[in-house]
Picture (tube, rainbow, N blue to C red):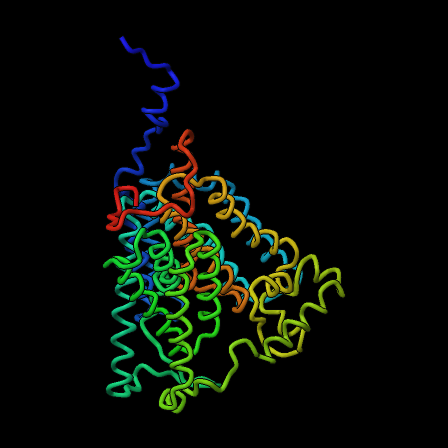
Length: 433
């Protein structure tokens, strides 16, 4: 009788996975998170009662009022990952700055909004995506909704020149669509992850991902969003560094460069939107403001430790009510050292989850990494946002990273996957994706 050694038996059986029923079904938190990702963008079109109260905020309140006891354990487990330290440090730094500077009720309102984002919105979306059966299908569905809206809006502009889709600003006119922020934020990461993970570029799935990427480039160029273009290029370089597939990178880069050059050099679009009047990277006003803020750091020890108070960075640097277009520098100027430490923890935590848990679905891992990276890079070109809608993009990345973290805990004996691992030609997301 041919006897096999215990080592050979273990190799054939493979690693033992600990069961986790919460990942085998759509829990209450999963349903609520999925609904919020759609309700917030669509509900933002219909604010009522007061300007700061919208349909999404009421939906978030109802979710905790009627469903909190159903996902209380998951909420505590999420906080226990170290997130509770961040959720305490950021409001503490912001509140201390407001108290020291003796600011008014408007600053306290901003503190309350940031606290709601950190303690209610982000945990619920993260828990929901982690416990959802097929989060990638939800994100892909939302991405196709964004694709449809962007293409339909662009078609109306080209065919009818509809003024309903054009907004005027101080520098130019730009294209607007329904604010599908959570799906817009993960659109490029989702398309890139799909293209780089797919085994063959010539497939229907790859064509679909290329169309989604084209929609993101189309909307970014028509909106004259230099930040979106820079983030897209940086995301492509990051995906290439992870996967090392130059042919895919060449195809993606061709879409980015040709789309940008085509629309920027179009006389018709220049006349309609004023495109081409601004350089991609040159913005003397914002640059001078950031340089002035950087030079003023450390000149006043009290402001270095406690900050200048909510929206005090503009007054400190230029004596004008202008806000810094760099979230990290603005937080250091306004919330001080304590607030900055908490804010840095917001992105250090998901990166830690991803770097130490590279087991499971490689596409989920790359979607999480690229979404977190793109949102954090975009924060370098934008001021702090206290509206819940603008945080949903980061919430999606945080949720996917938390999902990777949980699956890594349940697959303690599984081999670490290679980021360059390919999926079959026709990848159908399983119950885990």
